[in-house]
Amino acid sequence: MPQRLDTPNPSTGLAADEVPCTHLDTVAKFFRALSDPTRLRLLEFILRGERTSAECVEHAGISQPRVSVHLSCLVDCGYVTARRDGKKLRYSVGDPRVADLVVLARSLAADNATALDCCTRIPDSRG
Image (cartoon, rainbow, N blue to C red; front, top):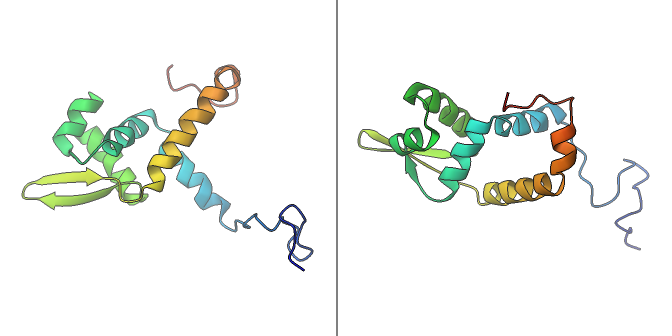
């Protein structure tokens, strides 16, 4: 007889639709990469189409070296891919789930905006 999805598995204690995460530090790091407003702004910009480094610098409104550091983080963490086109680097999103994640995060943040704005445990990046 198949196990109900909401019934805990006796061997793991998890419901059948839950996947045990053995690497919580990795998952936390996954979210930390998106916690920087500049990286999130760049990621959303790249989600709309392939972008060059120069376009990213213009969009972010900060220095090229700082944008480069943020783009390198997004690439290293797997959110964005980079390809060389002559002297230029072009950035794009390689996994469509990244777009889904950003849309879901924006929706959840909007639904919880009051609570998030009142939260004193997580510093506000706006100052």
